[in-house]
Amino acid sequence: MAKPARRTRKKTAVSAGRSLDRFKAIRLLSLDVDGVLTDGGLYYADDGTVSRKFSVRDGVGIKRVLALGIAVAIVSAGTTQSIHHRARTLGVRHVMTGVENKRAAIEKLCRDLGCALAETAHVGDDLNDLPLLEAVGLPLSVADAVPEARAAARYVTRRRGGEGAVREICDLLAAARGGGKRAPRSGDG
Image 1 (cartoon, helix red, strand yellow):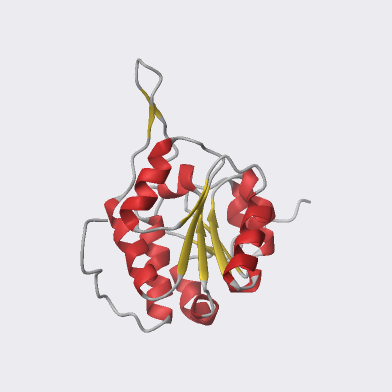
Image 2 (cartoon, helix red, strand yellow):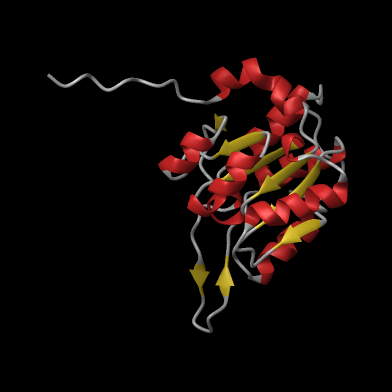
């Protein structure tokens, strides 16, 4: 007779409340792009130009954590200029595109910033994020990530990538630092 499947507790805000200490220790927030900052879709124009849709709410959250002194990095295998344009709009200074080994890229950035991987959170959604998710102090994933990324995460958002998942994480980081609900002062997200 087969054993019934073991139910595991979903890692969402319910369990995040108990582990806000992990969020409080974060000095660097690393973000994947496709599937995290976007919904994972790519829009191709007839001339071959590639476009992405980014969430304004995620942008407000990113500005909020930057204002709290948390460094933000964008790390992506993608190479289109839209990633750099979005980062510039938000004031994100650490942007790495065309990256095959995200773990090595973030390890180098940690050395440059003088912070440890244990003080780093990474939000990933796919297999190429696994080595970095397994290395950081706070591995995070979005609701619609592949099962392997969700399993590696300490916290899985309720929202999907590109639909407020990054904002959800930024709000937790702010709450852990006593950042309340204040919005950034200038510009859109």
